[in-house]
Every structure is written in structure tokens, then in C-alpha cells.
Length: 375
Image (cartoon, rainbow, N blue to C red; front, side, top):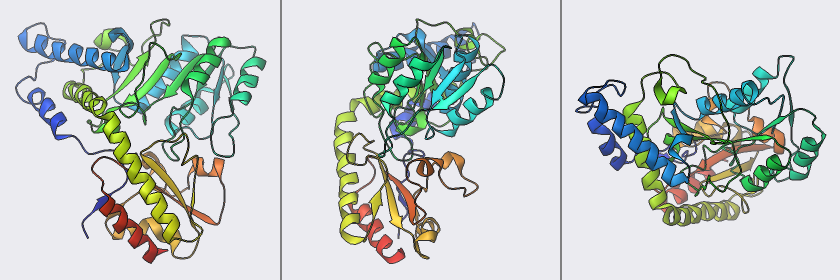
């Protein structure tokens, strides 16, 4: 059978229109944006035009948008800035964050000056806002709250406005990893009480190796990477010119069709959910799969058997691309820290299916049919 790609939360296919927008900056317009002659001026203009496009789509000021290498760098920068520049001495996060957040917090909390804690999770995997408020209330030091807008493994969506308002009430800094939601959900950063958000182009049919860090105008932070004066002295290094152009184009296309794609992709997810329930006994779902959850992600818990333990391997052999968790931590099967935190059931095997506009019901039918053979 032809290869079926159901791992769009890991990365998405580059949109042909995005590639078309990028190509001139790989060939004709190759100047260094820091150069003062015409080749440099035209590429500098392309970067600033892209920045304005991104700012407009997220309802932010262009000066609040910084281009980075992706979500990991953006998360690292936000957390370091909150500690070093904004006086945060305690970090509140959750045990189901991406490792780009968890490992960064672990690094800084190893010293004597910074402590950290996890907010409690509800049985469906959502953040317990009452516990978050209690922790903020008890802390004497200024806090950084770092909670992702949408979980990349189970898909649960955070009430970002509610968390932001709590942080505002207790004078805390709020960072949200929005890698799974930028390009998929409308964001109004003028109205959302958040200090930092992170985004990555390859999650919405843009190029890999480029992302954004939003830094609210009301705070002042120092560079994370030192050298030249790129990104208004905030991020040294020659800019990823064609990546930045591609990011802006992909975001523009994503938001132009966000309602139509939301409806279509959600229908695919629900269709697969129903088919699995109808065909595989005792199948379950992780997180709040029918509630506040990404329309692109379905985390499925299959009954553990000798056959299902090899499910990822066997799906791969059959040309079906899925994930057991986050692709960013591939290389060693240590199990998912997210699944362990919310549903540590040794009798279940988790597979994450994630969808894009390129997927079809026929593909869902083929995958479910193969699953009935393999489990």
C-alpha cells in the first residue's frame, strides 16, 4: 500500500505556495540582510515585511516578534529571560510540557537561586487552575508560569486567557509554548495576557528550522545569543532569510483557510474515533479527546497484547507513519512522560494519530483496517 502519513503533530508537508515564495531568496535575492548595498537592502525588506505579516496575523506589534530557529530556542530564550532579566525565582510548570521546557527548567532549577514546582493535573489531563492559583498565592518570590497552549501528545488545550489573568493578578510572568496552536487557532496577542509565546513554522506547512518568539512590549529582556546586531540586537547570527519568508507565507495561508481546515480535519479525527470504537474492543483515548482538545490530534490507548506491543513497528512496516508520543525525543523507547503523568496504565499501548488537510477518510479506513489485523 502507499505510504500514509498520520504524524502531522511532528511535522507537516511544506506547502507548494510556501516553497514558491521562498525560492527567490534561495537564488536571485541571496544578499546578506546586514549589508548596506542593494542586495542586502532587498533581503532586509523581505525580513521586515515578513515580521509585519506575522505581527498582523497574531495581532501583535512588529517589534514584539523575533525570528528564531524554532520552538526549542524560543522556549529556552523565554525561560532564561524570565529568570535572568525579570527577577523570576520560582517556576511553575506541568509534568506534561514538551522537553524543550521541562529540561530547560530542570537546568536552571539545579542552582541555588531558582526553584520549580508542577501544577496538579485533573483526571482528563487538564491543568488544575485552582492549584495553580494556590501555588501563585503561596509564593513569596516572583514566579514564571510556563504552560503550553496545547499538548503535543494528547492534544489538551489550555485556557490561556484564564492562566494569563491569574498570572496578572499575582504579578507572575507567563510563557506559553504555542507550537501546536500558532497557525491552527486564531491568537490575539493584544488581548491575551501573556508575556512570551513560542511558535514553529513546520507545524503549519511552513519550513523547518524557523520559529518565532513573541516578547510583550511591556517587558525588557536581553539577548540569549550574542554576536552581531541581528533581530534588533536580540538574536545574533545571519538570519534564516528564506525560512523567515516561508514562515510568514505559511502563516498567512494557514489563517486564510483556518476555519475550513478546522472543520475538515476535525471531521476526520471524529470519523477515526468512531471507527476505532466500532472495530477494536476496549479501545480508549488519552486526554480530553472530545472536549478542549486539538482538532489535529487523537491519542489512542489500545489494549496491551503481544501483538499491540509491536504496533508502531508493524504500522511502519505497513507504510503507516504514526507516533507513540513526541517525535522530538525519538531514538530510545523510554515511553511517554505525558502518558505516564496522566494515565500510567501498564495494560495500554498509546499511539498518536495527527491529521492535516492532506489526509482522507479513505486513509482512515485503510489504517483502521490494518489496525484490526495487527492488534
